[in-house]
Image (tube, rainbow, N blue to C red; front, side, top):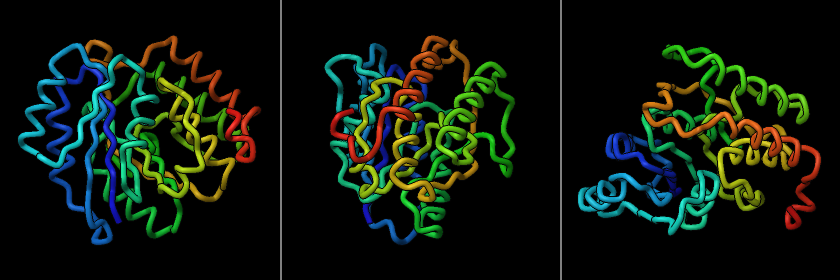
Length: 243
């Protein structure tokens, strides 16, 4: 099996080298024969692009795609999907909030349960984590409750950036969201295709503030809510080509 690790990055000069170092330092289950790492640079304005050029010298197999204009996280992940060749696709944020060290455990969970989607959860017990912003926690819990209720599936963290998806499932899910609503969209559509095909795994979380480079804004909450309602009520697998 080939594993594709997709890393959307926008103005991440402080963290991108560390994240790549962690990814390349991992040991994966024996079933993973090859790992390709794809960074989609979303037209960064800081030193991210120069750092990525230097990282390509250090890691010649690293694939870097730069968007000609800023497109948003969802659009960048979608571009990564298009470039990737892996049987398994993992989404890894470019910053240090979510640890790449969780990737092997999520692969193990997918193989053990014979499912096609593993979602990371920053709220499941089993891992000691720093405290987080209560406002962001409350908003995420509300959105997670809404999706859980409407989809009739018990979830704990739809907004977590750690997501492992089998290509067979991914090919059935058209991604339309360009920004942070992407996480909710892909979860909702995966649940509509097959409800018992998803598991959640507790992951490490090291939250950062807006001052430290956090990209999610309060206004994105409205867009995420709109995304949830749109795909919960107006999308079904049979009509995916119309969304």
